[in-house]
Every structure is written in structure tokens, then in C-alpha cells.
Image 1 (cartoon, each protein chain N blue to C red):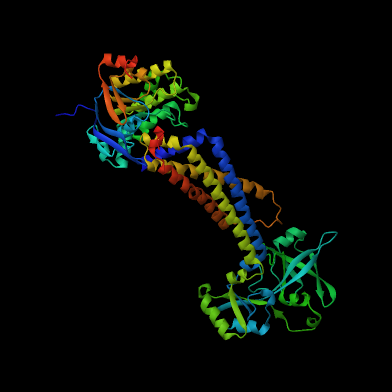
Image 2: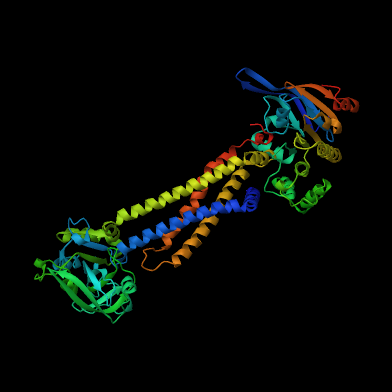
Length: 243
Length: 389
């Protein structure tokens, strides 16, 4: 049978040794994300969502379990191959220090193509078009320090999508934004993920942002405790009827 | 590989350009260190030259000293029969006696008298410097003198002028007047400008004790030896020592190192130069280490989005290399401008070899001191991008 998922994890566990014994930061989590599906990973701090994101991003090796991205197991790769996966197949936005401060908006976006050896004329044009689409056509040559937090976050989104990755990850994309801008950024993100048929995962503590996602995975104490997959369930969560 | 160089070059140069004032400051510090290192090297060369120039430029391969004189020219005495004996040794092409002494050059008007090295050489034999203007010395007894370039510069004397030397013989000050026939290139000896007179004239006019005044047996300090085949230096040296009584031989290099104060002076200056380079290592290493510490999150992001370690390392090294090259270039240019403003009497000499060695050392200290920060950059975990360790 063809694998219909872009990303699939099988009983992934990450344990840390601490003074008080073994801690399961991620405890037997299995999840699947289809292409074109935007998923939110929520939970209180310490629930293991950031650790889970690091594992999905090929930044951290799980203690056990499989992480299959495009048919390849990230958990079984060495660091050199994982770097290549991050560069090729994964797009990433971070909470802070997102952009390379000495590169302009368009240079930051082009960097992903440059790293993949794919920066040609078409790539340059696509970078500009994508930034224009995100409302940044006036800001192409500005340095990150000359842009607002929302503008920087949108440049980061462009950088995360320009190289056509299979998986796009966002770590608290709205952390430093006011409500209005936060809604705009997540809406744009969701639009691009659906349109370009990528698998998208967003870690957030802000449940209101789940309005734009297709599924919400809730974690607590390293475990996946709840999945909200219908629109009505998600909207109830957004309005605060759960938790 | 090409891609690594391309991307790391792009990142390194963009960062330098967008923070150019900060990087320029570091380059200027390197430029000042360069200036200092080049001047110390030039001073070492200049002061060393003042001591050794005449010996270093000799058209001879060996110098014969009285045995057990420890290669001290002033302490050695060789009489004329040694000259004949050495000339008979197989492999010797030419020999020349050299007598060294000090004298005071009296200048017309109120000008301060000039202390000079009074050197007795045999006209037509090794030891007589080649003139760049005028003629060589005539006979062994003539009242003629060749002055070196430094003497000419400091005294304003020209070819055809008469030159008056004051020396002490016994208890009397004696004055001798000689005719200047030629000017040689720089031939300083014992940190003094030089005047060259025929050997027997030298013997007549050199400073003497009461006892020496009536002695009629001219004695040289050392004998300069030119070989038929310079490659056979060891064999000929051995035959001279075995065939001629009471002499020992030194190569020019050994002779220079034995000059009074020469080794001590050079090692002092080399030590200073070395310390300056060491300070350079600390300054460059410190700057880049602090810079890396400030960039931990940024490098974490670069790695998280798939920048490989070779690119991060190469970018870090390229930056250091660029900053160092710019600094050394500015420093070299500053040194050049400064050197134009120095009078010829200041003992600063820019010699191609020593300058090149200093420049290469300066270019190497950058990458060397950057190794620590580069290693640190490579070890930064990409997880730093997520605020995790």
C-alpha cells in the first residue's frame, strides 16, 4: 500500500536521565500528518511539545521509535544525513532570532535555495514573488533589524516554504506578536500550507490560533492525550470549552 | 567543495560588509600590530646592518683569526707571514689583510666631529669595498681614502675633498689628511660609518700606544680569504688550520654572530617582535571568540535550517582571513608612508626577506588565533535555535 502520509511517527519516546530518575520528555507518541494538512501541537509548558518538534525537525534523535518523513526514517540517520534532510525536506520558523541578521529579507529567503544549490533565476524570482505575496514587496532589501516582528515572522515563513519542503514546522510563530498580527501570520501560513500541499505542524500555547488548523494534537507529560479533528471540536477548544 | 566555499564566502562577506565599521576596527588594530612588527623587524635589520654590514658584504668566504681569539676581530693579531702562509694553501684564490680601528673625522666649520671606523684594506685584494662613485684605492701606501655612503651622507664630503682624521698616538693627538677617491655603498662596521685606507697607511695613522709608535712590523687584525670554489669551504678551512700555525677560521656567518653585541641585540629585537605577534594572536582570538559567543543563537538557526558544519567553519575562517589581510595591507601601507619620512641616519632598513617573513607571520596569526572560535562555532548545537541546549 502507498504511504499516504508525509510524516508519520511510531511510538516515539525520548528519555532524559536526571537526578530524580529517568524522565520521559516524549512518551510513546504516534502521529500522522498528510500532505496539505495543518496540525497544531498544543499543551502546557513541560508537556514535551518542543521536544517533539525537535524530533520531527531532525534536530534531536529519539531514544526509541521511528520518525518517517517521505518514507525515510529520521531516527536511523546520522548527523550528516539529518542536516541534508533539514535543508531539503523541512522548512522551519522559530520563536525568536529567526532570520540571519546580516542578510536582507530576500537574501534570507534565497539562502534556503542557496544551501540546496538551487538558487537560479527562477528561484530568485520565486523568492520575490513569495515575499510580495506575504505583503513584503517594499521590504525586500531591508535587514531584519529594520523590520517589525510580524514582518520578520512572514519573511521566516517565506524562507520555510521557498524550497518546497515536505514538512513545514513552526515553533510559537505568534509568541512576539500582538493578536491582530498573530491572526494574520497564522492565516497566511495555513493558506500557503493548504495551497502548496505541504504537511504543516505548529507548536503554540495560544489556543485561539487553532482556528486555522485542521487538527489539534494535545500533549501532556510527554503523552499525546487528545486529538481534536472535527471543525466543531476545534472551535469549542478555541472558544475555551476544553481546558 | 565548490558549494561550501561559495556559500561560506557569501555568508562571511555579507556579515563583514553589513558590520563593516566593527570589522574595520579590528583590521585597524591588526594594522597597528603590523606597523609595530614591521618596524621592529626593520630596526633589527638596520641595527644589525650597522654592526655587520661590512662583513656581510665581503667578497670572501672565510676569515682567519689569531687562534684562541674567540672570533673577536679586535682581539686578534696576525702578522704578514701568516698572510703568505695562508695564500699558499690550496684552494685559496685571494687573501687580504684587514686592520680595524676608530678615528674621529674632523669636519669643517662648527660641525660636530664624526666617529668613524677606520679600516685598513689591501688595494686590489679582497676586503677593499667596490666603489659606486670615483675610483678604487691606488697603492698600499697612498694617502687616499674610500668613504662609505653613510659617511658621505653625514659629513657632506665628496670625491676629491680632503678629509682630516684625528687619532691618538702615544699621548699626542695626531691629525692626518687624506684625499677622498671613491664612495662605496653602505659599509658600516661596529655601528659606525666607515672610511677605508690602504693597509700600510692604516698602520701609520691608526691610534697607537707609546710602545707601538716605533714598531716597524705591521700587524693586521684578521686575514680575509677568498676561495677558488666557495663550495669547498670546509676542506679549505681544515687545510688552513692544519697548515698554518696559530690561526683559526670562521665563516662570515660565524664571524657576524661573534661581533660584539650582535647576537644579544638581534635576539632582543626578535623577542620583541615575537611578543608583538603573540599580542596579535590574543587580540584577534579574543575578538572572534567574543563575536562567536554573541552569535550562538544565530549559528544555531543556520544549522537548524540545514547549514552543514564545513560551511560554518569555512565562513568563520574566511572572515578571520579577510580581516587579517585587510589589516596587514593597511599596516603595510602605513609602514611605507612612515618609512618615507625617516632621515637616512635612522637605522631602519626594510629588507625584502625579513619584511616578507614578518608579513607571513602576521597573516598566519589570524587563522591560528581563530582556531578556537571556529572550533566553538562548529560545536554549537542546532537545538540552540529552539532555545533548547
